[in-house]
Each structure stands twice: as structure tokens, then as C-alpha cells.
Length: 465
Image 1 (cartoon, rainbow, N blue to C red):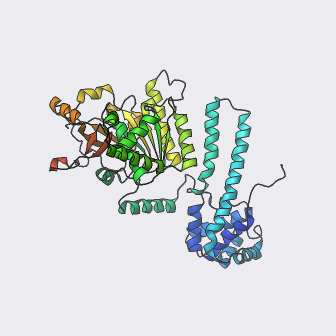
Image 2 (tube, helix red, strand yellow):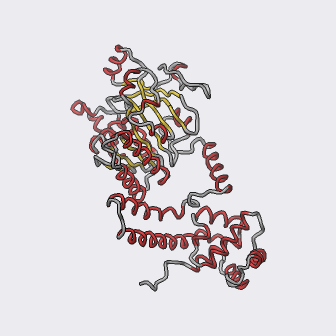
Image 3 (cartoon, one colour):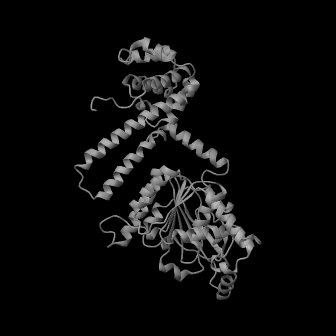
């Protein structure tokens, strides 16, 4: 067993290099976009040297062809090590067409992943005998190592040069020009300001009790899975899977789950239609209770690996336990640990993490007024780690209005864009929250005051509702 060579595909590596020689202006940048490690993905040392030379010449704006490449290798004293000019000619002539690059790259990446997996398993086995931390921490680290094998096709590690940064910026700007650079929420007013929920971001949705934060999360999840067929992952620590499924179906069908005995045949037909939509929807729910941040991270990795989820919802942050030794003694430190863990997860998996959060009791003194970021419960780290903070609140304290809304089942809820790392904040968007249906829709715009309010840039927004 010890005499066996690691997995490799020499002919495919020659094919990649041949394509880069035949059509350098197209194939070299295409190769770099597809392969994290660049020339380091090659098993053969000769191919690593040749590949590095091609990339360096391309990055420096030099002409790349058989003559210039062999001269560059000769000047650097590498020509003999790679087999001389005859080997360069052999590489070039071995490729019938540069159009075959994706096929060759696929074979090279397959063997690279196998080598990385072999390295990860070797490291895990070695550490297994010398580990000093608890078993759960070790399993989490081992899982992260294995999961990282999949990252061999998703960019150039975490180091970006000027060329990569420019490409990323252009990609972001082009997406924004098309109207959306992330996943939509289902509410045009919000999407217009956020440009969608983007990978690597943590979006916190905070509210006082019974203001609709869970309904908001489930409405967005339902919209993405039902209407857009986007893979969605949900972690619900507050409600049972049965309760969440019922909420989503009744919200979609606009039915009151608490008055099933009063449903007509048309209501049942609507419920059955929504149930059929759920069967076809790419929605995946982890209903385990008592989860800690390590469980959440492992669960999300599993959902990404097995189901390809594009966004994850967590309901809610304060119910996720930490794993630090002082977690039970210092609740603020524990929540901070969970908040940082969710941010690290979003960056690691590169999908949006949308999480509900409670507001502290001080917020109850300001009922009817805009909540403040300082009212996020138990930790200022939530405000720091979040890329976007949305806060739901009812903009009135009038008892008559509140009682009338409760009787009718629909109340006006304002959604405050309290923080946006890459954009303007202090924007109010008016929503209609139907408590009977657990559904949120845009509030009908019947007057200029119902339009989203945008404060002047750089000025603090008022605390009035």
C-alpha cells in the first residue's frame, strides 16, 4: 500500500497545458477561474513549472506561444528540468482543440480532490492518536477538513490579487445592474434597497414577541422554495416540524390553522394544493431541539453537501447554545460565540444565513417607536457580526387601533432596515401581518406616507414611528 502513487491524471494535465498554449487568452483565465490551486493542482512537477510560467507570462501581459515559453523557461534555468523543447512540442501537439479544456480540467480536479481527501484522512488519523480536546470538537474539525476538499473549484483560496478582485467587482456590479445580486425576499421594496440576500452574509431579523419575526422568516423561505424553486434549509429551535409545516402550508393557502373545523371544501382544496406545492419544493428542515452552534454548522454543511441549499434560516439565535466552557455561566459570552459562529459559517459555506433574534425588555418601554440596534437582546456582537439587521415593530400604541387590528387579524407592521453594511439604512417598509394566516404582504400604498421612508445620508433617523 505504501508504494502506491497518489491519484493523478498525467494525460489530462498535458491536455490542460496544451489548451493554454494553443489559446492562452481564453484558456489561461478560464483555467484560473475553474481551479483554486492554479498550477499547483497538477501532480507532475514539470507541469507545475510549465503552468506557473504560462500564468506568470499571461499576468504580465506577455505573448504566450511555443517559442516565448521555451525561451522564458531557458532564461529561468528550468528548460532541462521540464524535458526541454521536445516535451513542450509534445504537449502542444497532444491537444486536438482548445475547446476540450473543461473536459481536461474536470479530470485534473477529480484527481486533485482525491489527493486532498487522502491528505485530510491522513491528518485526521494522525491527530486521532494525539488529540487533547473533547470528541465533539475533534469531529467538527475533521468534518471541516473533509468539507474543505470541495473548495478546490471555488476560487483561488482566500488570497485575491488585483485581477481576481477586479473580476469580482465587475461581477457584483453587473449583477446589480440586472436588478439583483442576491436571493430575493419576495418584497420588492426591500429587494430594491438590499439587492437581495448575498452569499457570506448574516441577515438578522429582530422583533419583540408576537410581532411576526418567525412568520417573516417562514414567508421568505416559502417564497424562495415554492415560487423560485431555490433550495432552502431551516433550523427551527422554537417550533416543532409539524407546526412549521402547518404554518407554511396555511400561509401559502391563506387559511387559519386554528379554525380548521370551519374550513369549507374550497379551503381544503386550497390546503391540498399548497401541500402538493410543498411536496415539490426544495425545502429541508432540521427540527432537532437543544442545538448548539457546532450542531448548526455541521447540519448546514450536511444540507449543502446532500441537498445543495442556497440559503439557511435559523429560528432563533437566542435558542442556539454555545460550546464554550463558560457558556452556562455567562449568557452574553455565549450569544457572542453563537453570533460569531454564524458569521464564520456564512463565509465558509458562502450562502446567506438569515436568523431571527429577540429584542431586550428595554424595547418594551418604547412600544410604537422605532427599535434601536442597542436593543438586540443579550449581546452587542449580534450588531457587529450582522451584515444586515431588519427590525419589525408595530408603529402605534393606540389601544383602540391595536384591539381593532387584533380582531380583524391583520395589523400594520413596519420593517426597519436598521443596518446595511454596504448600503443606506434607516428605511421603513410597511407590511401587513395577518396573524390568522401567519402571512406577511406589502401594506397597500394608499397615501404618500405609506411609501418607504429614506433618511438623508449621514443623518441619524428619528425614533418616532
